[in-house]
Image 1 (cartoon, helix red, strand yellow):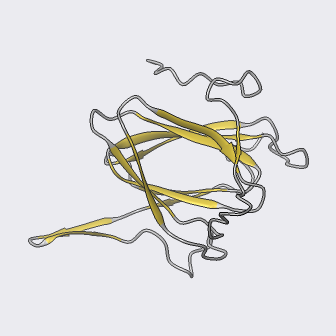
Image 2: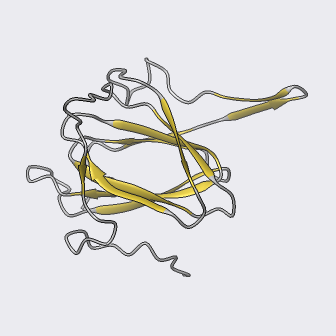
Length: 154
């Protein structure tokens, strides 16, 4: 089985500090995982809070946590996918700056695992449609997704 869910793309982000502050490039239109631009928004999550599960039928999401840390989880429930049933965690934020592309049709959510509020930037491929949202939700603890949001000490 693949070690990555089909359609997921991960980009390591580089922080460039100098005496004035920092710069971190997140997404470019010539990045291999980029297809199209819909909008950009910021979502915050308080420590210990889970935001999930949800999926989009059309839209891809591009998530980067720019402050704090989140455990981003993707579950592939797509009937036609070669990685159907695969589940993967990504720990992104202050200690692991990455951009993660979440493909349409996959369930995803995150939990803030830092002691401070997490700030997550999303660059979805489609603008939000207020009359017909491409937002399909499941409860955070649904039995349809084999996952526990508890912190596991390994």
